[in-house]
Length: 231
Image (cartoon, rainbow, N blue to C red; front, side):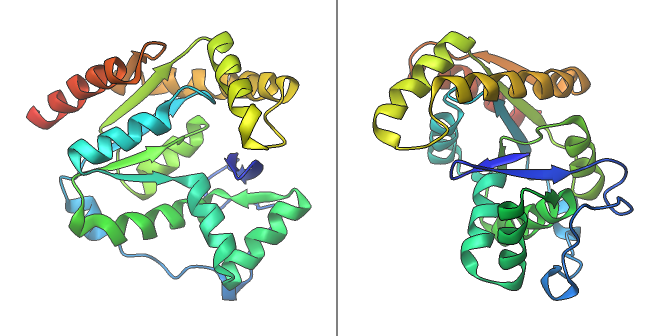
């Protein structure tokens, strides 16, 4: 599932992506042609998954990484939202899926990522995939279809802290999902999905305590990124 603009995009990922039975099939006119990502697979450009609960501050840290290291920040939620806003055949079908509460095929999400990564490949130092994967199979399919990730940054924040941050944001955000009951459900959902991901990719995970000030947190991030660059 992917959240964007306060709305939740659900992805169907039971079974293999290529052969899965999808709850909603995009018509041929809306399907992206096969994307050639040979250049991406052959490149040495690092791919970093960025994980953390709602209100953990990973968006702020991604902005800092982009500024210092020249990485490209990609959010699956943003890519889905932009596809819907485009008014294209694919965007219209995604809008229909969202409105009906049906499942966005994971293959569509991966195709959006492929498109975005290929579009930035010649002018980036690396990729930050924000909020992905939400489930173990999403990670496995990403690595099968695109490329293995090099590192996972996991921003660890206590639920009480994330709740307080989001309730503070609610004072000005106007978002319908920024209320205590909904936030607690989002946190429960995050933990139920994130723990298996962290366990599955334990050797790549760098856990960053993220309850201090943004600069102190970023210093920890830089240590991991600098180490990656020297490998």
